[in-house]
Length: 315
Image 1 (cartoon, rainbow, N blue to C red):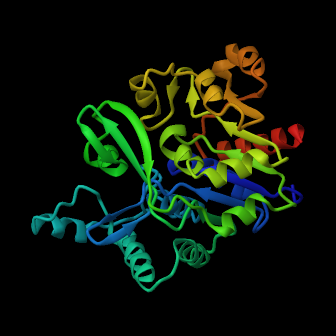
Image 2: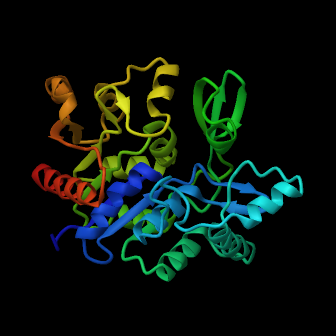
């Protein structure tokens, strides 16, 4: 598979699983991940970038395997002391994780970009995959709910996704991508694009909300494949199905296909959703059926291999 040079579009936990599989079978530098930063926020004076950190920890194999986020063998002394001091510590920062946020926040104050900082951190974790933030500017995912509008992390962590979602929007003073992202998309040696099985509305749409990214991908002659985050009418993990229901959308792979219509050439769906093959392909999207549930590292690698094979078939 040495000829493959891929771009993955990814959020955190679900997307990181597929990226891990891709990372295992591709050569150094062949995988570039455009990472969601719509979840980024300032907390206790630190710049937190949850999806980027999840990707880094997962690819470096130092992530917490049980939660999918954070570091393995983490300690919580700082978090606990903050609680004793009465700080608003609803967002759990482990001690190891906090060190990374300290490093990133200081570098940002010194004028470095999120892209350069992410590349530096990835090198220190000895990653062979390139992780590219979708932007060096804040583009905040805002969730409009029955309890009012709130930044994504407040909805997701502080409120435990309990409020009912009405609408999702993306707010920014500078909704611009980076030259590194555009260079990656326009790379003449690119094999194709993979949209990881991340939440389409909370993890992928923030990236595609940057018009230059979406338009440049759509204008590319390279094949584009998405992996469905829905299996058998439900999401594997996270609030995808809940959000779809609350926004009046059918929880099915057909809805995912319609959501990515005109953007993708192919969709990988689970064996449980074979009944939708004809309907999806009638919309002009090719379908590959697989077992897309990733229980372990073997599953991640297998699905990654199948995704690459599908891209090569479409090209």
